[in-house]
Each structure stands twice: as C-alpha cells, then as structure tokens.
Amino acid sequence: MAESLDNKNAFFENLKVYLKGVKSEWGKITWPSKQQVVTETIYVIIVTTIFTVMILALDLIFKWMLGFLPKI
Image (tube, rainbow, N blue to C red; front, side, top):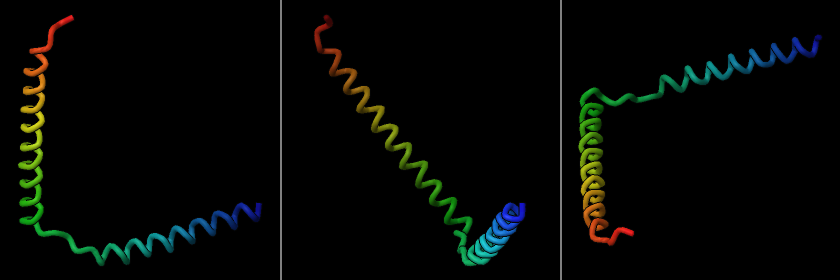
C-alpha cells in the first residue's frame, strides 16, 4: 500500500515538473504573424491545386492512351 502511494506521489511530482517545463518552453515560442499565415495558406492552396490539375491531366492522358489497346 505504501509503495502504491509512493508511485502516485512520484507520478504527480514528475507530472508537475513536466508541466512546468512545458510552460517555460511555451513562452519561448515565436508565433508567425497573421499575414504570414494567410500568405503561406494561399501558397499551399495554389500548389495543391496545380498538382491536382497535373494528376487529372495525366489520368486523362493515360485513359485516352489505354483506349487504343484492343479489348479482350
């Protein structure tokens, strides 16, 4: 029983130390500006759209090319 309480106390002590470390590190974070987030989000949307169109085009080209193969 005493060992169980020691384990619980150790767990909560370690948790407290961990959360203090998290709080300390949280203050060191430099968050991006709103403008940077908006700009990079637009870049991601544009690049994703370009790749989607490229994959669609390749799919249509391969489908067209496979149309020339004889059907068995």
